Each structure stands twice: as C-alpha cells, then as structure tokens.
Length: 326
Image (cartoon, rainbow, N blue to C red; front, side, top):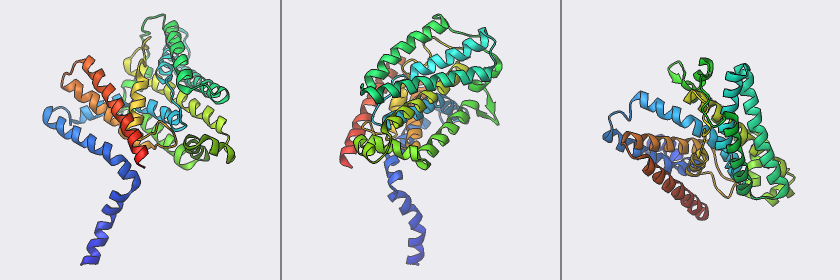
C-alpha cells in the first residue's frame, strides 16, 4: 500500500519540485487570488465572454512582450515597441484606404518595416556600445513623430472589413487576435528552446564576454534579437489598428510599459540570460486580469496608472531579489 501511494504521489511531487513550476508558482498564485476575489466582487468576471475579452485585450500586450523578452534576455531593453506598433498600424491603414494596396501586401510591408527598425536598433547598439535604453528612447521619440506624419495627426478610419476581422473577428467562437498571440508564443518558444540562436540569446545575456570568447557571434545575436522585437511590435500594431477599426496617431502609446511589466512579472531578468515563454504569458495574463478587474470595479483611469506603476516597480524589485537569492 505504501509503495503504491508513493507512486501515486510522485507526479504531484515532481510537479511541485519542478524548477520551472516553482519559478511560475508565485505569479500563478497571484492570478488565482485575483480571480477568486473578482468572482465574489463581480458576477461578470468569470463569464466566458469576459474571459474571451481579457484574452483579446492581452493579445497585443502578449505579442509585444514576446519581442521585448528577446531584448531583455540579452541584457538590454527596447522602448520602441509601442511606437513601432503605432507606425506599423498607420502604414497598413494608409496603404489600404488611400493607396489601394492589397491588404496582405500592406501588412507584409508594415511587418518588414518593423523588422528593419529593430534591426537598425540592434546594429547600432551592437557596434557602437550605446546603451540600449538611450538608443531605443531616441528612436521611440522619432517614431512617434513619424506616426503623426503618416496619419497627419488624425485617425485613419474606413478600414475594410477584411482588415477589421483581424482584430474584431471570431474563428470557431474564439477572437481572431488570440490565434495570432498563441502562434507568436509557440514560435518564440520553439526559437528559445529548440534552436542554437535561442541558446545564444541566453548565453549573451548571461555573460556577453564569455559568449563572445566561446565562439558565439554576440553582435549578430543582439541585432537579430532586436529585429525579432521589431517584427513582434509590427504584428501587434497591425492587430491593434484592426481592433480599434482605425489607426490612431497615438496608437501603441505607452504600450512598452505593459510589455516590460509582463516580462518582469513573468520572470524575464533585467540583467539578461533568464526568461521563458510560459512566464511571459502568465505576466501578460496577470496584466490583462488586473486591467479588466479595475474596469469592472469602475476604478478611475488615473488610479489605474498608479496601480500599474506600483506593479512594475514591485515586479522589478522581486526580479532583483529573486536573482540575488538564486
């Protein structure tokens, strides 16, 4: 009897002792606590429609966080993701509504532009040694101006239904943006876990000099990491414009803070070399749940900004503490 009981307990013990589970257990516990609290606080919170709404809302943040994770895991940061998303959405809307460019071609151009922006960022950072914060901050400001120039400071509306379907449509009862988010998470997970480039990202973030001396082209890893961040930002911008049924001159504004918060809460280290897709997803999910909960409780938007700021600071402090402890 004792032997059979131990065998039955083994799977649970293995799960509880699994390092990956233990690293996510904190954020999973927070998600459960918030969900239980909101279930009593609002009858609408745990409904299927609201769950779909939360996942639709985090689709943009989740895709942005996937790209941001590459920059952070190399020991840097990419503050351009929000502005890149705004520019990409504006490009598609401009091409489709005013220039008659086919939707697929317009989306392809926008994603290529996003990738080029990230590649330029990564190249300058890798070959000049300029701090990623400074480089991405400067490009962020520049791109925000470009977004205003493309839109002429006004929303671009009258988007075709085929474009709006990418943000507002449903496939088999599931919102379309969720599919894009899931596909992005799967691709990123494969890159990080199954490719030599993914292993190089961890190595460069963990110790740049050691990675370089071990034969890894560290500069190229930085370039491609920021390029991936730009590609993800561009895709998120396309979905954002489709979801809003218009391209806004302020599209993606401050979205980089959401992406950073999702990564930080998900265990991506600011010093580089650490992070995984499940953690990023849980981080984005927690941000979405918190945003949704504050809206259901009719908390003023100004106070919502205060709460988000506290969450980001707390996440960074926890990340630093957890890193030192380990």
